[in-house]
Length: 374
Image (cartoon, rainbow, N blue to C red; front, side, top):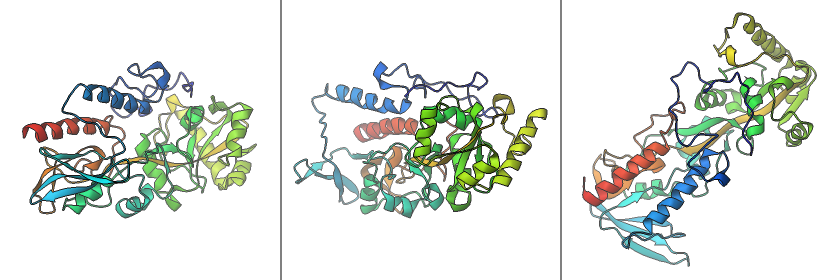
């Protein structure tokens, strides 16, 4: 996948009213820490972090890595967790005793439809796709903890959901200019959100539309779609049933199932804002986008997409898991997306590093406390 060819008018961040985002070594487009063959997606960084951690682990004689050996049950003896039951690669079960403690770092439960339905809001998953499938995130740590009396965040629990989803996953870089410059339109042919808000804000606004956001579109013209404006790419998305075209906005509405008259009125009103430089409806920064000036109009179907769940087991400042009486369950820790007490109903996408940052930090805190008791 190649990097998108952004307009020179695009700012460093698509959120001008917000404070500048913190620069990181692992950027979304250029990640100098990664090997050249990793591509541009910063999501690949986790693979290399894990590989490096494995190399470090091999330096310790008292550290053992076991793959294909999932934990299936915690062993609680009295007021503490003393170990885990695991399923070995050959299908047999075994016990691993824990002298210091057990740290649950099992991720969320986005790959478990039953838990998604039970613990999250319908609007957070009903019409969403799955951005980055990780088949291991089935809530095993949550369930094992609850089984031994752990307390958990109240429901509904927060979900890390982003905009720019397609029915399969997440729109690739070819579409990004069109999505950035276009408008978010619901089936009634109306805007419903400031399009340049952070991903989470737009996603939540879309999920609040009728049918939990089903039938929403990115609408743009041929002057906005650099990167996907060749005939082959256009046809590819049309063949998938995701892209619709019209010579007029009314014709586009008929093709896509949008109210065409409302759509035409919406675009006319939006174009009128450029004369005064103020988006009177949603206060979008018009200085870094463009009006509709083309003669071909497109609607790209879109939905929210789920990256992870971020609610989990209740922990204290040492990442020790608490029971339903707010008492520490000795020897049991939870970190990352298996832990709770961090997000209050919503994931703040505009603050970078709150997910992977807490996973790294709390993992260190839990390990240090388990080993040293401090």
